[in-house]
Length: 397
Image (cartoon, rainbow, N blue to C red; front, side, top):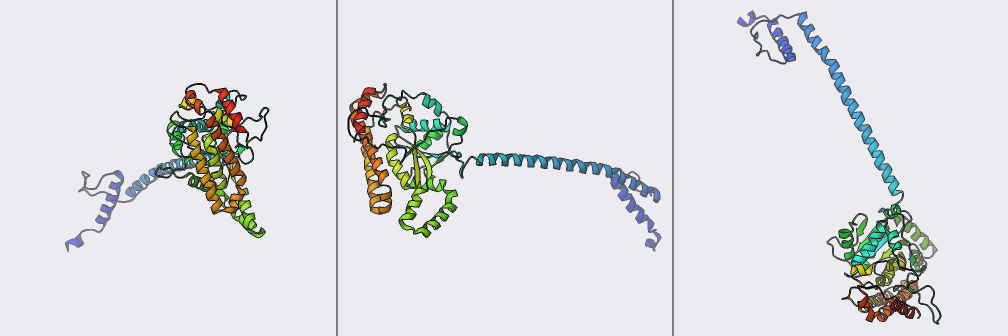
């Protein structure tokens, strides 16, 4: 009976009051007139509608501001992405798979010994940093004899001049770019302790200078280093190789296929001690590379004495003659293994083997001729007369 006495419209008014209070930010219980009856009717509904209409423009303005900000950020992001892609395209237009300068071969820098690593790292860094022009400017008079190559013209006398590498045919001569912009696009691969020297002293490391040593830093055999180098440089040649192999098989395969594979070569420039280049050249050629070398004058320009070395590039505690005898022994072992393991490849490499062997004997002859004078010239100017006599005597077979 009591419930029936309460009008139903009171509950409807309380619902409207609660909604109205929520719009103003306070509850019904917090109002001082919470116990009083509030009028209901068209006036209250009109008030609620007016509040709703006043907030609609503010929400629209906020939405437009957010939308405009998102559009600006989107345009900025797209512009940045296009700029990066444009620069990437510009760089890759002048580079190969791993970023080598267009038209320029990669440098392969190899250690020879602890006494020469600093000098070889300095030479390689000079090329990569575009400072080779300064190196050539410091070259001594080219009329002076070089201990690393025979003169172009031997005055008088008889006999046949030795075929010394680089000869421009079996081993080509590569002139480093003198423009800094081009030189700084060059990339290199390094092997042995010279890698650490280039990274520590000249701040030249990956990705511009790839390290051919193992992941733990251990020095891998040089033959394995050439295989790793081949894999790095030939990633984009797979399709061409497959196509050429198919064509070779159609022509008969066998020896012709081997000749074709020997003819397709990636060019590399060997940079090391000149006495180490003959052995490296035959390893590189057997691994499928077209071998290039710096001109002998580049090694003549190395300030060997500044690195505590003699004009032949050895420390006083190192005998050039003994070092070259070890180098000749390694070369002979490799040639014999090649003869026993692959007669066809040995036959194709025979001219290169003969030239490399002759070059080693030339260097060994010069070292023996200068043996009494080597230690005395480590910290002094090279004995031009002694070098000239030794080179002339050793250049004729």
